[in-house]
Structures are given as structure tokens and as C-alpha cells.
Length: 106
Image (tube, one colour):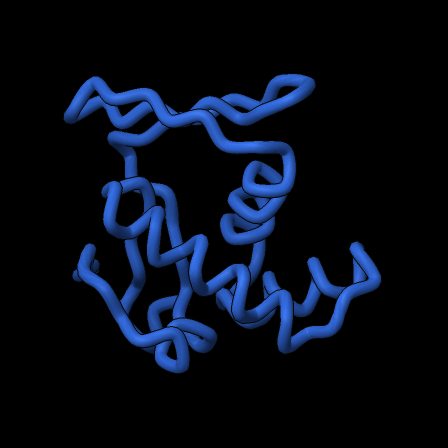
């Protein structure tokens, strides 16, 4: 299964599946989620909302589905949450903390 770790326009993200690669581990704490890239040795602290997004991305079939579930959970507009989730995904991609599966590999 091929994966990619480069920037994708936000409108191209919603139908894609995001996955956490094997070299990345994370753990939720009360006030933040700590993410460790085992290849680089870099730790990344993300707030509770970011940790919730990361968890939703792993469970959902697509980034768009994760955004829809989060919008419902938080009582926010889907468009607003899609924008925020896509921006968060772009940041995670830049840091090598998620990968995007090719279309159709959900």
C-alpha cells in the first residue's frame, strides 16, 4: 500500500484517509496529547482538541467523515470544522505525524 507525506490542497484532503504511521506513537493526557516521532526523536505536544482530532482521524474512513463527526460532537458548522481539520492535517503531514492513503485505500 503506497502512502504519501506531502502537502495536499485542503479540497483534496476531505476524501482521503489519514493514518498514523508505525513510527509515530501518541498518548493522551489530561491537558494534552503527546506525539512522538520515533524516526526523528521529536516530541510534539498538542492540545486536547488536537488530540481529539487525531483520534477521530484514526477512526474515520476519511478526513471529511472525521470532520463531520467532530462538528456534530462540538455543535459547530461542518464547513468551519472541515477547514480547521484540514489545516491541522497539513501541519501533521509537514511534521511526518500522519500519512495519507491513496484514494480508495480506506
